[in-house]
Amino acid sequence: MENGDAIIKPNRWGHEHPEGDAREELANRKGLPPTAKLALKPFVDAGHYKMVDCIDTLKKGGHLGPNGAYYNEKTQRKFKKMIKNYLTYAIEKKHGKGGRWSSEYGDFLKDVEDDSKTDEEVEAMVANKDWDTPFTFDANISGAQSKNFFCSANIRSLSRAMQQALTGTPQACGDGTGRINLEGRSLVFIGTVDRGQSFHHIAAFLLSKGETKEEILRGLRAISKKIDAVHRAMLRLPAGEALYNASELGAGYTWAPKTVMNDNSDAFFSAWTEIIFERLREEIVQLKAENAELRGEQMDTDEDEEAEDSMEDVA
Image (cartoon, rainbow, N blue to C red; front, side, top):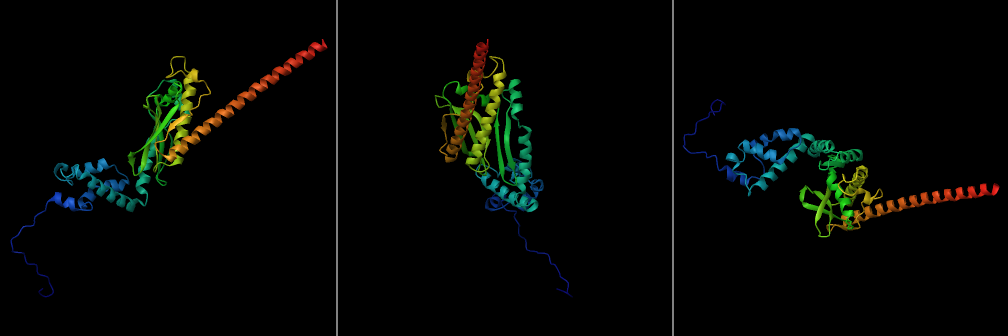
């Protein structure tokens, strides 16, 4: 110090300042380096992200080594965890708690609703013989509630319920797999099972969190309703043009598989039980209505006969 001023003297000792091995640095880090975080800022601003886009951005920016060389089978899990942890924190900090899901689910809901079909639209698809176009239905998607439930099928897949009913083996199977999920959001497949124990897909639905009876039951009810819509429309097609012999099943057909497979899940078992009982109740109500109608016709016939007898007596 001279007169209160700082004097900076250059360092005259010759030595190197190596940059270090980036591979080793990344391997030992618990979080992303500042330059990588900066590269991910557009995803933070947007409030949502896709992991594949994040990896691509970091590779192109050289944050994962030359040409992404440090991102491989051994390191990819760690990098993905670092990216997810950072973006979850940064997005919630910027957009508030739940901001990430609110934004992602808003886009998700729009995509699902774009493919959604009402019963009337499903019947129109049958009339146009649009067998294979996939569609969604009965969506319940909300970022605030962390809900992402929706069902998906096509006309051909839903028709498999009726096709199997014609074989005399009305079985069904529900298979929820934990191998296809995002943060516990499991995909469930519903299908028929033939005599050879082969699975034939009818529809699928996405659960919000694990296998809960409420959402499984909602999915089965929604699928059952769409099967009804398909069958109504198939009955109106000329003979030989439907995917199955709809007239053989008749207008009273309902999807109520007598034998079900529950994927070792109490929630599945309980949901299937309610669906079967609901359908049986509907069949009983229908039978009672038909019997009442028949009795009414019989009473009308008896009254007519009595009236004719009275007229004859008068004559």
